[in-house]
Image (cartoon, rainbow, N blue to C red; front, side, top):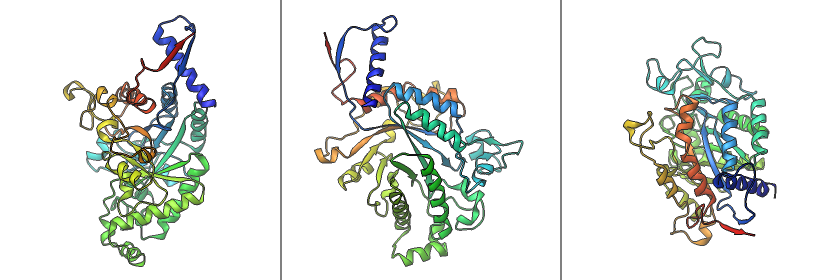
Amino acid sequence: MDAGLFYGLQTLIQLTESAGTAGWTVQSTYIEDAPRFDYRGFMMDVSRHFRSKEFVKKQIDVLARYKLNRLHLHLADGAGWRIEIKKYPRLTEFAAWRPQATWKEWWFGENNRKYCEQNDPRAHGGFFTQDDIRELLKYAEERHIVIIPEIEMPAHFEEVLAAYPELSCAGEPYKNDDFCVGNEQTFTFLEEVLTEIMELFPSEYIHVGGDEAGKRAWKTCPKCQQRMKENNLKDVNELQSYLIHRIEVFLNAHGRKLLGWDEIMEGGLAPNATVMSWRGEEGGLNAVRMGHRAIMTPGDYCYLDKYQDAPFSQPEAIGGYLPLSQIYSYNPVPEALTSDEAKLIYGVQANLWAEYIPTDEYYEYMLYPRLLALAEVAWSAPNVNLTQISIHVH
């Protein structure tokens, strides 16, 4: 009820603006309107380039205004760990800082992909304290937005393995990208980190990443091979599935649900998991056909790090082309689905990865107005536009 009143107020504000009326004057009307999807999301990458608490709040205000109700925070990646974990202080003393100011310099430069101490004069980075997170959560809750944390695993884990190399297959820093699934210390670390995450975040879902794992070291690591033998796992894909299943059991035992990128389906999908489909729509379609929820976020329609106009006329981007019109054209529920399968499409989400976006101004340039187009896709059915919402004048 509170959310409905809140969104009704946003509609009223939009009516006054579209009518160009002075103050709060608007013609008496009756509006029949409702969201198409329960999950209407935006993912903010704060790892590649850290964003301040104030900047996140500013974006929360816009999400609320356009009736988006999920903010997915990508809090951990190779470029930097961004949340205080009291049990593991090296994550923010060391793994949150790098000698280079930009991701591009850190990734491609000389002596690249290394980290430094927080007090190093060269240090660039940052992190949210747990008090910062509590403040953001309260701010979002007041605007009917749920913040979903993502702690990436087993890949994009370089920063953790530099701080705690005993969790890698090599046992040394700067050797592996993925953590060692055969090492029981790895699961101790993950469960203790996730425990602190769950103590902070009340969200139904905890996002565990699961994408782009190279799995190279697992093929020769004695501990990983022993884990595979003990659990009758035929390949490293099933070893990743073992990890995801085990983490899901842990999350479920604490009343939470697991959310992950569509690679979590490789080797067998965990029983209660929800799939976030980014490599096209196939992962999401397969998930709903198996009886799982899916959130659609395919790169062709939802990745805002692509160019939005001719590349020569735009700031540097990761590549690809995604104009405003293409986002408006997206229908997250393909006609091939049955009515029961369609009900499992939980929602849609825009993602803005920040590898090539070092400043706040540049981030907002890439974000708007394309995020607003996705907000319309998330709220309205394809046969409805802003001029077709039922309005009755008294």
